[in-house]
Amino acid sequence: MAAQPSGGSRLFPIIGDPVKYVESPTWLTETFVERGRDALCVPMQVPEGALDVVMTGLTATPNVDGVLVTMPHKHTASGYCSTWSERAQRLGVVSVMRRSDDDTWHGDMLDGLAFVKAQQDHGARIEGANALLIGAGGAGSAIALALLDAGVRELGIYDTDASREEVVLDTLDDARNRVRTTSADPDGFDLVFNATPLGMEDGDPLPVDVSRLTSSMFVGDVIAGHGVTPLVAAARGAGCGTATGGHMVEAVQDLMADFMLDR
Amino acid sequence: MAAQPSGGSRLFPIIGDPVKYVESPTWLTETFVERGRDALCVPMQVPEGALDVVMTGLTATPNVDGVLVTMPHKHTASGYCSTWSERAQRLGVVSVMRRSDDDTWHGDMLDGLAFVKAQQDHGARIEGANALLIGAGGAGSAIALALLDAGVRELGIYDTDASREEVVLDTLDDARNRVRTTSADPDGFDLVFNATPLGMEDGDPLPVDVSRLTSSMFVGDVIAGHGVTPLVAAARGAGCGTATGGHMVEAVQDLMADFMLDR
Image 1: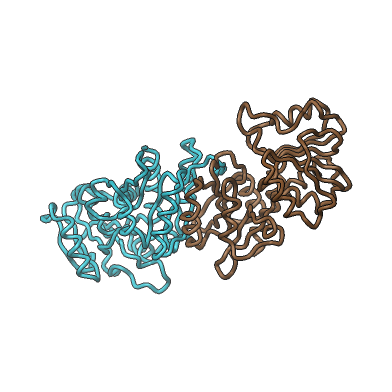
Image 2: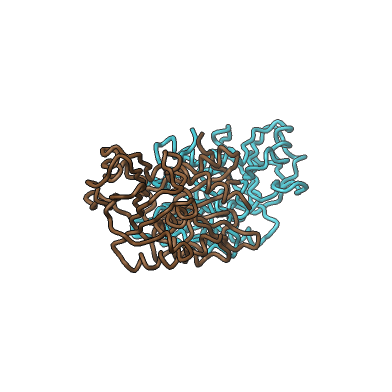
């Protein structure tokens, strides 16, 4: 089913830069249509320095009911919210904002939930598992929190930037006995997850040492819109179960539609 | 054919308030699709005082290639353009703006052309005719200029606000021998056109004295999105040929697509 824009369409822009690879305009719009809503998710290419003027304009446009946030705005957009879900507040990051009755924005961070759901939908067992997470930025922090909420036994975190590792350990302080920093070596882990941007550009190094992958491991990647990443291809070659960034994008559509329409 | 928004979609917002009745999101988007473009016309409800912040935000969003302008912004939006078509400059009004290579906006006013085309498409003969035009606001001025360009022999203009009549007479100064002010009585005219907002609200007075319509007259209306207006209904009852605001909306889609994609 495809969209039929009308004068009455409610708008849910996705703001980011670059924005041309994002899939929500297609899939979230389709989800709205399936739910009988006259609503569109539209891509807005918003360079880093333009966030303030764009948010001011969107806030002044009453038929903009919600905003999806992607790189490089996930941290800064949180500052345009007046209220947050507990996880968004804890992470200091939003992936979605919806307009409240008093015309302020309410933020949530759904990426971690969507990532975990994508793994589960493709055969990963999260509860009780030993998970390696590469990348402790915005996506990585959200995924770490969601993995702990979903019951991983142990979570090893690696980031080339040690200061990001420290920030995420602070954020997860109440689960301190289950979290540790580690290396990019997947040996000994049940689950291996990439939450870095590696795999978006041709020639990117691999985020983990793929020679150490074995068929008992499950490998998940956040990179969407770039086909099968070298990490996922290597994991499949090693006989691992896998979930791609595209699967995460699929998983997030229903979560986003629920959030946006819950007004 | 319906639209399939994607991350790569180019955006052409229509800004106005109210915006829910506008038909360009449906028809211009369909025209883009028919021309093989990944492009969307999206409605943005922009209250009068919000034009500046919204235009600032849209200008800072590089995948916004053009903006359609409707009430109440047609005069003020012209001030955001750096270049104009000759007719837009003369009228001081824009209905469309497209982004130029240097990131400034180029404006044009297509409503007059579209109105004349709609009349011709539905059987009116413009050249050599004696035309009555009710309403000398933004739409009326544009229609007056387009009617003169299309060769009307005489153009009678009536507006309840005499100062607007004077402004339009000044604008049309080079055709002064063909233009005069008159009353709302259609007697003696071949063509009778409404360019006022009358007909948008239930209970609006009729823009002309419909008891004086005869079957030799052709009657056109600018009001779109409100079904058949009382004026058009009365004209049909009197045996007149008619063109509705909906027909004008149809006629403008190709003109707008030509303008927006000519970059």
